[in-house]
Each structure stands twice: as structure tokens, then as C-alpha cells.
Length: 85
Image (cartoon, one colour):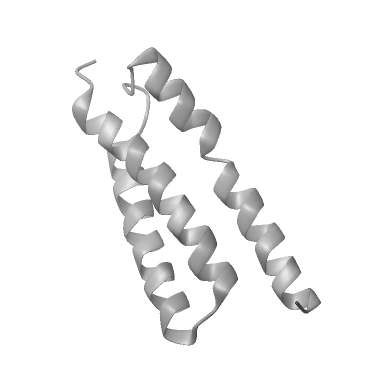
């Protein structure tokens, strides 16, 4: 594994894991009233585009981190749409 891949994985890990505290807090409190629906909608769209791009160029760091980001951000978006605040 070359240093470009390591840097890509490290950067992706940091930006991906940043969503974990919000996802956990939203799930625990069953409240998403202070979260922006439009922000998470646009963000999830961006993740799908990044994932598509990563697949097209066969870049493992982009694919891996965006799959995980999509799971976390989509769960927050789901909570926003599901919880009646």
C-alpha cells in the first residue's frame, strides 16, 4: 500500500467517523429537530456521487469511506424523517 492510499484512507476515516457521534446521539435521544433536512439530503446526494466516482476510477479509499459515510449520513436522514419532534 503506497502513501497516497494511506493518506486517502486516513482522510476518509476522519471525515467519515465525524458523523458517528451525531448518528448515535440522534438514535439515543430519538430527536432530530435541530438537524437540517436539506443539508443531509444534499450531503447524501454528494456521497452517492462520490461513491459512483470512486467506483468509476476504482479508488478503494473513496469507495470504502463513502460507503461508510453513506450508512451514517443516511441513518441520520432516516431519523430526521422518522422521528416526530
